[in-house]
Length: 316
Ligand SMILES: CCCC/C=C\CC(=O)SCCNC(=O)CCNC(=O)[C@H](O)C(C)(C)COP(=O)(O)OP(=O)(O)OC[C@H]1O[C@@H](n2cnc3c(N)ncnc32)[C@H](O)[C@@H]1OP(=O)(O)O
View 1 (tube, rainbow, N blue to C red):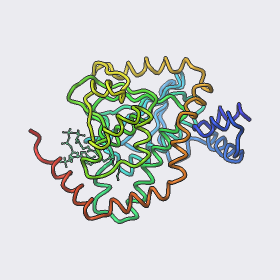
View 2: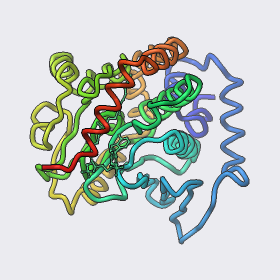
View 3: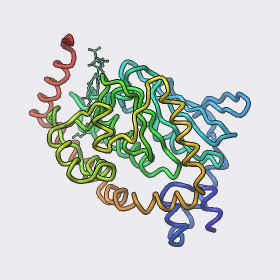
View 4: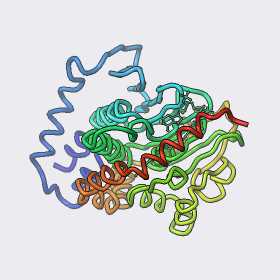
């Protein structure tokens, strides 16, 4: 059973089942079955070039999987700023799920198709002037993307080739390793308080896992955005590299991680992240209600409107 699990159902939950004994054999069987049926008909457009398979059901995200190296490249492609709309979040969760189920996939490099911006974070327009049901659906999609990325058993490397505020920083922090272009014009951080909103506990926990409690407390309260050099200094980014080499450096870093036997690395990763994941899973519905209530408040809607207006002003 352990060997079967490792090959077929590889989320971090499955890794810990291998270590501790599988409490849910039926879910393991379902995962193996859906893996065998992937890709689902109609859901995915396929092209095959030698050993590189391109699959995507959206023009906002491209995923190229190289069967020979076991490395997939996931590129965000939602102009102008790769904001995380409901559609893109949904595509991300589906794409990550497919990679997780693909037995030849061992690692993912996440990057942006657009120069200068990794991701502007959550699409603010999804959080403004919409009915409560929309906020609930949107927030569930944010949670789902986080669960898939933070809970991935694959090696995940963020090749941060531009600015990465808020939800963009969250995605990067979910990865196992972060490389950032050394361009001082770029910045990264959780700036939620500057929009008058509050990063939820699982954003906080993710950041604490990367930079520790003190830096998280200061960064979150002040909504700090860090230059690439500052981000390395506080441990938010592992290293900066010349802008034109971000992707190649990510590949080299990936090769280093792939030298570690998958099962040992996966179980270790699972041990590190399981408590944080379980915390959200236990409070998923109340977290959605909290978000929907908070974001619907008039005062918060006014704050977001003012922030977006300021963003639209010509830059000095
Ligand atoms: C209770 C809630 C808890 C958690 C919630 C939220 C987490 C989040 O992720 S909230 C989103 C926070 N994001 C930001 O604050 C980023 C804001 N954007 C920027 O700082 C800059 O746009 C950026 C540095 C990314 C890029 O700068 P520029 O290249 O100079 O582009 P522009 O600023 O001119 O923007 C172009 C265009 O995009 C619109 N935009 C930018 N960010 C967003 C966004 N996050 N959502 C929606 N739209 C966004 C911007 O308004 C411009 O629009 P137009 O003026 O209509 O062209």
